Structures are given as structure tokens and as C-alpha cells.
Amino acid sequence: MSSNNNNGKVAVLTGSSRGIGKAIANQFIKNGYPVVPNARDEGDLKKAADDIAKEAGNSQMVSYIAGDISEENICISLIQEAVKRFGRVDVLINNAGISGVSKKINEIASDDWDYVIDVNLKGAFL
Image 1: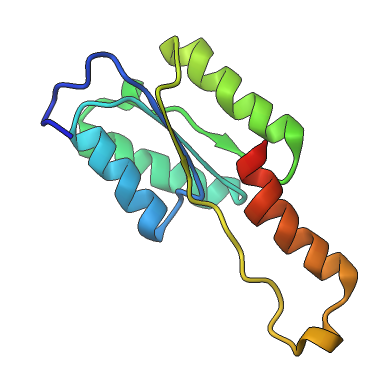
Image 2: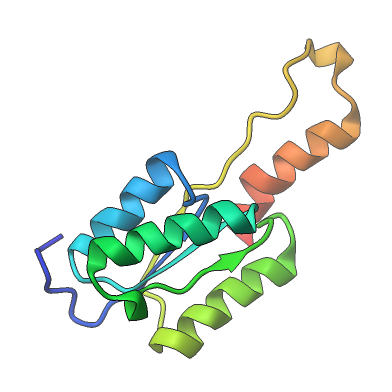
């Protein structure tokens, strides 16, 4: 990414309230991209968005949508927010993922398995 020259491009990032996702969002911001981060926990996401905006020196370059990306309506809202706020989506980082419960395979309930698949696979599809 070239510093402060994004040609108007916009980045949307799932799983970006901490760790790798937040670091990626910070890198896009440093390079002049408006960003729309997402995470399940709204409190954590708001704090991350505030931190990212401080990195940019401009709160107008950050918008966010909290929610679980295994839910189609959250994914739709995330993209709609980016388009409404910044006019487009050029980069999508599907960073959200979970490992699920730590049990032997024969002890994992099908609902637990379904949720891991919904977040890690269906979320990226949506």
C-alpha cells in the first residue's frame, strides 16, 4: 500500500476489534483508506474504531457496524454502511473467525459445530 494515496478506495474488515484485524485496519488507515471495521462486541468495536480514528487523525474516515457475521443481515448492513458513508467498497478483509469449543470431536454438539462453520465459512460467503 502506498502511503496516503488510496485513490479513494475503501476497506471493510470483519473481526477487527483487536489483534490482527485491528492491526490491518490501522495499516489501511495509515495509508489513507477509510475503513469500516466489524466485530461482535459493540463496546470493543467502538473502542477499536476510536483508536483507529486517532491513528488517522480524522474520525470521519472510520465507521463501524457491530454484529455477528454469521447473520446475513449484519453482513448486508456492513456493506450498506460502507457504501452509504464512503460511496464504495474496494477491499474486503474476512478476518473474523472462531475456534469453537475445545473438546474431542465426538463430544462436540452439532450446534457448536454449526456455529463455527457459520462464522468461519458462511460469514465469509455472506
